[in-house]
Amino acid sequence: MLTPKPTLYQLEGGIQHYAWGHRGAIPQMLGIGNPHDQPHAEYWMGAHADMPSLLIDPSNSLSMRLDEAIGKSPETLLGKAVCSELGNRLPFLFKVLAAAQPLSIQVHPSKDQARQGYAAEMAQGRNLDPATRLFSDDNHKPEIIIALEPFYGLCGFRPWQDIKEAFLKIPQWAILLDELGDDSASTRKLYERVMRLEDLQLESMLAPAIEQLRRLHNQSPFKPSDPAFWFLRASDCLPAEHPWDRGLFSVFMLNLICLQPGESIFIPSGILHAYLQGVGMELMANSNNVLRGGLTPKHMDVDALLKHIDYQSTQTHFIKPSQSTSTNPWSCYAVPAREFECQHLNTQALPVDLDIQSQGPEIWFMNQDQGEASQLSLAGQSPIDMRQGQAVFISAGTRLGARIAAGVSLYRALVPLST
Ligand SMILES: [Zn+2]
Picture (cartoon, rainbow, N blue to C red):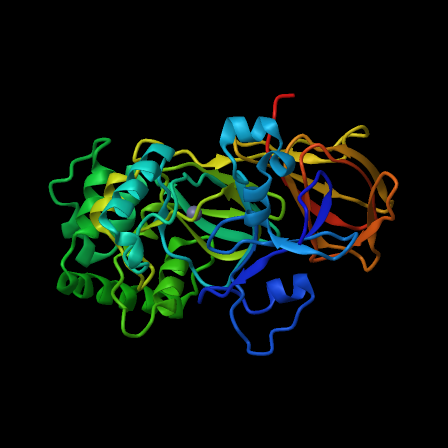
């Protein structure tokens, strides 16, 4: 059995085959096949109980689940500072996300809301029925997504006038605007109204809208920069037995975002969002707490959802990475979260040598190389190779040397510590 120590481990993540996943992007990145042509939605690197990664000691090939290793020796792997500040668990969860179809519209709870919600469900014994459970843990889930290719998403409410204009273009929807007024509460009132429509009303409002927009699309195709494009795409992706999904209204109510490679957004608690299409690196607090708002046949608790939405902040949190310099080759995506920070190293024509002293736990993932292995080494030990699709876990207090080959893209998840 593996003994946790301050060192460098190979890390083997797990794949989530959610239905919206892309079939090729993750298998290609990881260099694995996809013989059953399954969707590969997310590659998880972390210690979340829903899919913990495996730690492998390269010196003797012994392995252990990361969550178990942390449970056994939290201070050895996470460091004293992280344990005392954030508890005895890995503070973050690192993922590759590859969406071929829109994901469910969702919002994540704040820490207090998650703690209360999880405790209440545990007390009710609702943890026994995963289909209706809302809280899978007691943590919040701020997250950052960094695009690896053009990446489309919906994030936060649009200004009221834009929402109103979009709804007025569809004759059957104008009635939804009745008596809403034009003040700051209008967005909330409209959102609550569409989320509480009767099922029969949904069909009578959505069917003509789909028909109308389909007709316009056939005359002159909508571009992906137009919400109507995603309204039709989302409608096409709904299962035949669940065609009238109230989440479709949200496509016209939320800001449509297109991130270019390297661009990113941060999503705090309370912000309604959905990823529509693309491949990206995602880093978040270690949680799987999601309250859904449609574009999914999965369980939805509208009352709970409405309680968790923040209607005030309409600004999208774009995170601009710091530039790498001659003394620091990493560019840094600093976010307003204590649990994580993402860094990126893009070597150009020449390899880059690194000398790292980890303060807390780190996970590195190489999403791209040019066929040449990079080498990571601890003092007095033979180096290990790192290639595209591979990940490593670095315990707190590890001194590490690395030669990162030319033409590599390497992402690094760590806990921002002041010392
Ligand atoms: Zn999310």
